[in-house]
Image (cartoon, helix red, strand yellow):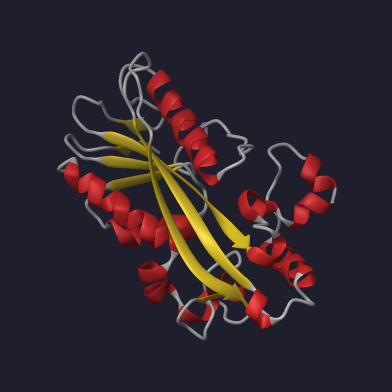
Length: 240
């Protein structure tokens, strides 16, 4: 299947295959852009997320994908995707985010998606494969089983990296946008909405978890929403 990017269409390549993240990003940035994900670009190279910070991982993903896109030919030319930079602006947007729990000295942090796998052979797998959400949540609850409510404070942190796709020889500037959502970890998962640690995370000012509150609330107060609002303002400065 060939994906056609219309002339003068601003396109954002989301450096993720996570459908939940994609939905959140599209809901907040709106329909003014044409969105592609790594699912649309099956030949895109894998990026090992081994940086010590969220910003480092997001930057590594965004730059790596942008270099690959530009290196495919003159302008933005990828198998299955037709466009030219001179006709449209193309950006790569990468996200790295996770949960920081104060009682665990900020863990799981950048290891949030593979928290449970750190305990076993999966930690040695290529790319440090992610763990199932249920396993990550179970490990978190186990580590916090003796921690009282007042000491279960935590926050979701998100860093977005934006890079414009240009010719292989052109310099690239990476812009970072961060967001934080403070809250606490409950004693048991509640709700069936969201993903990751959402069923355990109760945002400050609420009594329900993100798993109960749903996307309407989450997309207004979450760490990713906060970062995306900053990004949206920056894109407006570009007159996009």
